Image (cartoon, rainbow, N blue to C red):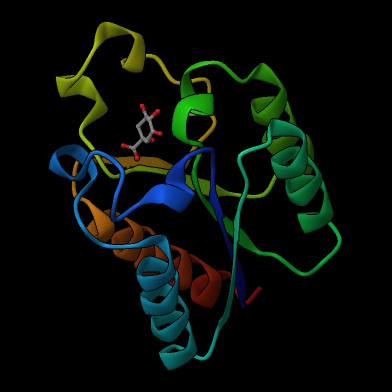
Length: 148
Ligand code: DQA
């Protein structure tokens, strides 16, 4: 049971970045909580953040062969722009949940469209770090029931 958590551009700044929108929790704290949550369920979880679209695409492609059974992804701003990252997820055909810390539907109109949502198993937006935990809980359930 192996879960890959991907964070897109600017999420490395969590904790100091627009705290009124994204809160005070750092990315390291989120990743630590998720790793513990997976460990307690007998699974492994790897996290990867990049500000570079190509690096995220490379990581998704690598997931095809590294034992990953489920992806949790917050594509950040690439949510609204990246056909290429979407294509990578479609190519590896691994199930994934799309997470956003903020409720993108309550924000600017350009954040209302996602290139990922129609491929995702589900989408969680607006719950802050709890959204990632809910996504990992779902991934653990799915992996346990599929035996991956
Ligand atoms: C975000 C929402 C995006 O619109 C934004 O570009 C981000 C973060 C979120 O987690 O709320 O970088 O994905």
